[in-house]
Image (cartoon, rainbow over all chains, first blue to last red; front, side, top):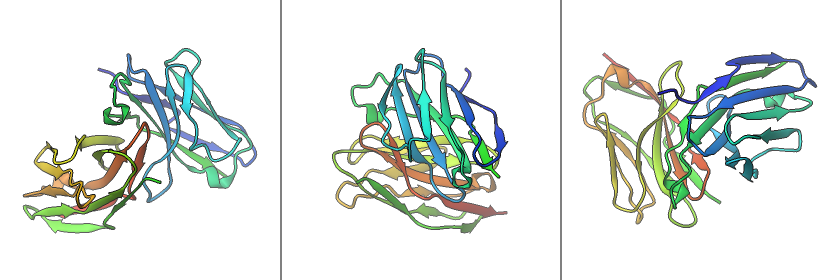
Length: 118
Length: 110
């Protein structure tokens, strides 16, 4: 079946611009996650959705970052006034979200969007 | 807070050699533990997982055992192949988010 998809695969923008990154999770997965991976490092958590609501946004670095999931499926990560330090690969993952112990759920990752801020 | 420490790479081995990649963790509560792999040009894939102490996860000849007493989840494979060349990430989940280690690059030479 179809996995997690992310668009665009690459995005180059100029400092100060606004960008939107899209994630299509696996059909039927109620949980959706965004991570950010800088070069040579492991992914770092940004935000987690259960259904339409952001259940945990503690990883968002500042108020320039915002994410939505209005219908409980597709999610968009929005970055305002981009800075060079925002350059990274942004990863989306989804999981069933049905386990009583959500920490045991397997998260399935998309291919990522490589964001470059010039 | 939660954290994962894994051995730095790159790890370079000859084909059919034995592989160990060390991973230790710090966590509150009772986390689940994961190994993810990132092949060149591809996204992160789950390799194996263990959800409670003494569980052994295994897949594709790789194994890791959840050791609560040593807070470790070392990855092992008895005989590596060139196709195993990739970056390996150890991770834990104590709630909803994954906390990753920094990754270990494995290079297997024929």
